Image (tube, rainbow, N blue to C red):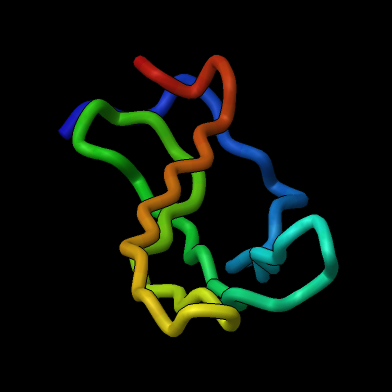
Length: 72
């Protein structure tokens, strides 16, 4: 795997992401952990499920957060 072009030395080890509806009802809290992607870019990644508090229907969550300019 190629080495990233740059890293953010001040970035935390994880991010907590809150997903809520415009009415404020909480769907999910997701933890995105730091990751080196297969492209060599660095950032954060989360994969989880969320439930609609109104209907109970479940949704798949996939989040990539990439540091701009880190791709080799």
